Image 1: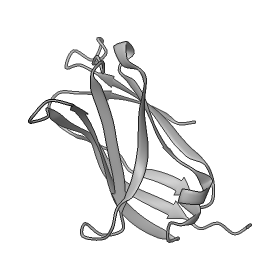
Image 2 (image 1 turned 180 degrees about the horizontal axis):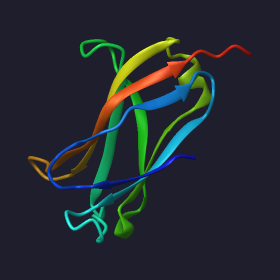
Image 3 (image 1 turned 90 degrees about the vertical axis):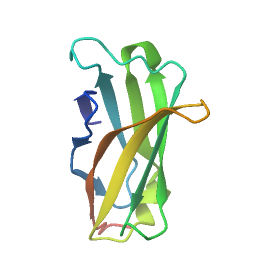
Image 4 (image 1 turned 180 degrees about the vertical axis):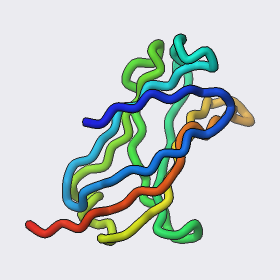
Length: 123
């Protein structure tokens, strides 16, 4: 399982990823404050993420789950059924937002980039 640590300094981290079609995929992310030593407390925050083949195509939702709020840790995941449904080989766009339930919500885009889908041979 890949692991990433991100500094939240009001800029979005750009990171390209690879997903193998037909496999269970997840990544664990630790979000840090500007100082990079203190975790960004995710208490009362939610995670939302999706990927799209083009910026105007229908999205595929990536499940985002806060796993340790006080330490700023969350996980992104897709099931094997979800990755099998992705076109491959192909490149998609994705982003990850952290938001609260306020009205209007406070939203931080913390991660974005491209996801390369490698084609499944064995089915």
